Image (cartoon, rainbow, N blue to C red; front, top):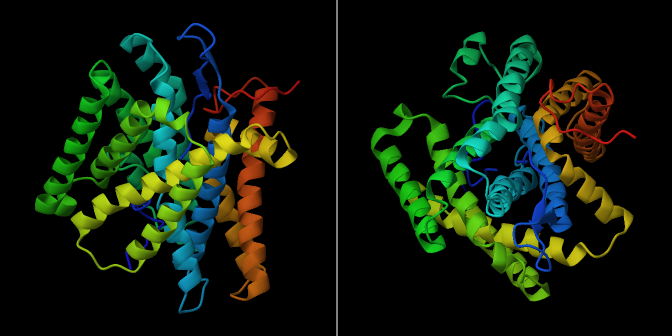
Length: 369
């Protein structure tokens, strides 16, 4: 069974991916090809994805704090399944969205400053200081010196913003090439980085491999826009089955690291295809559940940057109240951490938007009318 990631380091990827600080437009085939309208199926996919992000961090925090008694088969299996595709999903969606934009490189880079760079530094500092102050209550033991290293050692969970920034830059460099060449270059880059890690090991920052892996999915999203629009029920069923079977095989495997690195690309791709296909099928059904998922997806960035503070706080409070590994307490903790990890960031986003302070907090603007 592949080793699960630790909360005090970056989340390794069989694992990786989280929310995108942009809206979800898609080309409208009945208008100018450069006219953008919102594709709600992408919001639904992001809404599902951000719930998995919060749930995954909740589960991982409980595992790393030895909350579960051994053997802990279902917590490990659940966490592995979530981390197999949830972060690659956000890289794919981000690449999907980038492919529909035709801004000059300078304009694109300028837009990355308030949407990615500023939130990365702001919330890394907030999270880092919080971890230092709460060291005796949490499973993360972060020294104050970690803040000085965030230029090359991101603090969990903000590695995604770090990697996403360089994925945007990388795509700007290759976006005028053919789609096949774009994907080939991304795969060759990932292979080169994996081989380099085999030689140098921990002498290279882990974020290098995470960024290279994220770039594969980013480019995959950029070149698959037309394909995703044709996803239907058949794709949803086949991709779901492929993901389930492959996840079971990989979870029980003992393959070498390089083999697993590439097999999990296929595993994540199946999970992403299933998510995007089901999201497209659900988008026309405007019931309360679908609207809620779309709303969460629209504000996934805000949930992403704040949720880890909430889930850790809930875990600390419940532990001090005497929570232990029983069915009832386990379900209460998972439900409370996940629901509050989603809802409280939205409440904070609403308040700061109401006060017109959303940009200062590095959050998305929320309509408070």
